[in-house]
Image (cartoon, rainbow, N blue to C red):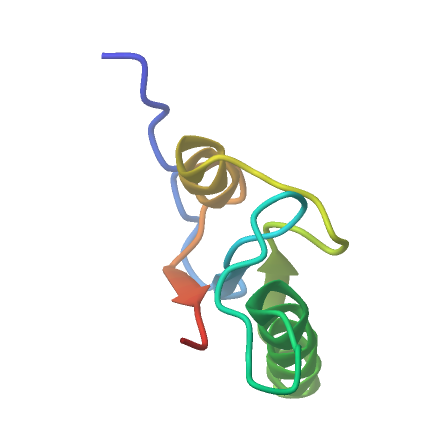
Length: 93
């Protein structure tokens, strides 16, 4: 069917969380009254959450670390590639 399978987990391995800051690149998401763009707000949130999770021994990764557009299908593939135990999509609208 074209979808990748999640990687098999090794027992006792580190938990993997993939954080998906929504939108990015040409897709700004919602725009606030002050002109703030959702794509920037959620990226900052995702980076903060990643830092907190890493401080607690969790392998936290982002689907994007800059202002780039990634199609939804590719975001899911990133989570599968890293063997994510949790995939969290972050939005602020």
